[in-house]
Image (cartoon, rainbow, N blue to C red):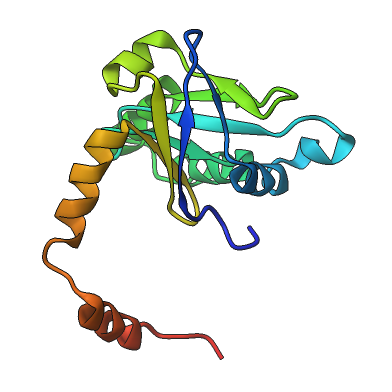
Amino acid sequence: MELGFRDEITNKVDGKGRVSIPAAFRTVLAAGDPDCDSGKNPRMVLMHGMGGDPCLKGYTIEAAKKMERQILSLPEGIKRKKLYHRMAARTIPLSIDENGRVIIRKDLLEKFNIDATAIFVGHIELFQIWNPDEYVVHAAALDSDIDDEDIIEFLNDVPWEA
């Protein structure tokens, strides 16, 4: 996945719900879409209402397929049934148009309070789409009890590959 989804980028949302996917994110989406090699625009999967954070989540086609395979590999039972239902009911495959945009449904824009602007937040293997004001509050809460020394200490505890 190259270096994955990184950075925080704010883009405008027009009255039809069209928003431009940041160029760097489109590159990652293209790399994670097997059909993109044939000259087609990249596709992605938009997830809503899963994972706790009040935002939309974007995945590559390959990442979404991997999640489906992981769910299907679970033994038959209620856990698999619930996960599969949520995955199917709360994900939307989207094609990126020739201008680098997707259309987000009006009900989803309203649910996540996204109006004239949206902030795209990279999370390496996925990206989030937030209402900018809500993201500022969310990010401040994440950063409130951690400083640069804590980050260095956490990184020192990570087992790095040689």
